[in-house]
Amino acid sequence: MKAFAYVNPTNEKEAVAALSPQLEQAMPIGGGQDLLARMKDYVTQPDRLVNVKGALESTVTPSRGGLRIGAAMKMVDLAEHVEVARMYPAISAAAIEVGTPQIRNQATVGGNLNQRPRCWYFRNEEFVCFKKGGNTCFSITGENQFHAILGGGPSFIVHPSSLAVPMLAYGATFRLAGPKGERQVPAADYFTLPSKNVRTENVLAPDELLTHVILPPPDDVKSGHYEVRYKASHDWPIAFATVLLSMSGSTVKNARVVMGAVAPVPWRSRPAEEALTGKPITEDTAAAAADAALQDARPLKQNAYKVQVAKVAVKRAILRAAGIEVG
Ligand SMILES: Cc1cc2nc3c(=O)[nH]c(=O)nc-3n(C[C@H](O)[C@H](O)[C@H](O)COP(=O)(O)OP(=O)(O)OC[C@H]3O[C@@H](n4cnc5c(N)ncnc54)[C@H](O)[C@@H]3O)c2cc1C
Image (cartoon, rainbow, N blue to C red; front, side, top):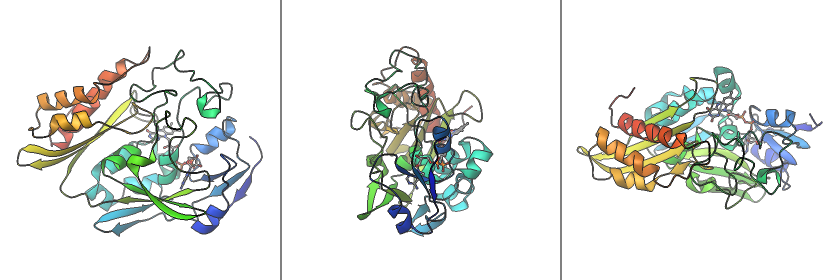
């Protein structure tokens, strides 16, 4: 690993001042579960690490009928937080599935949302892909069984954060702090497609920090979260979905359908939402919405199977949101 300086700021202002406008020169570190692995693999080689755990908040506080979550909060604390589970059950459901207990004990909310893709070409120093300043995506002609089936191009990574999906579904806003002060960005605008910016996955500048996640009041929504995994633990999902339903009697008034691990960003499906609106939730309406969610899928050579897996995730998340237990 390349030698680096380590800065231990005690507040947000000091932490921001220790960053740099140059990409990957000075980088925030939370639990280090992603960043340290990339540094050991010579994929990311910063000169300076800025520890945010003593500088940013790590608590959950009430905020205008919703909740405000400090970015330094550990994933284990988020997963076990009683108010988060009561108000935003899909966030708890996603948090508890992340990695392993050891990973959740170290990882932070800010680090989870900003972790870099797991693409094996990106993670291998030998492959200088688009994301590392190169001019190709090796997955297109290479091993692409876990890559994007929606929204891909020119890079076909899938977004790695489990937390990002329910955050988008619940309409979270991210508070960012930088040298010019703070700004608030809706989660829906935070994550960006490679067609907009192929080097990064979001709008965070190199000298900015994600400091808080602000969740609006959940109102009267029912939620369902469903992940399909190759193995039960210690792995990322192959596809997953968070679904929120507002009901009017027995029919859906409004739906929010967001998928994970299928696209370079958490992928909101308006066709699926429209397919549910005005309908009662049954096996058939859930299956029709799942078909709508994947109608624009464009699989690569080895990942057509993910279309069906994602449909299962969407259908089961819908049924779960409606209180219909699934296998
Ligand atoms: C075997 C295994 C299985 C896993 N399974 C899953 C899974 O199912 N779902 C899932 O979501 N994750 C999974 N992970 C990934 C793991 O959850 C993340 O690596 C972890 O959440 C990152 O958090 P961290 O605090 O350790 O981040 P760090 O490694 O400290 O940072 C990650 C990135 O975010 C940046 N960063 C950190 N904090 C901030 C901040 N406040 N503002 C701006 N940028 C910041 C860093 O500079 C770095 O680039 C898995 C990991 C492993 C090893």
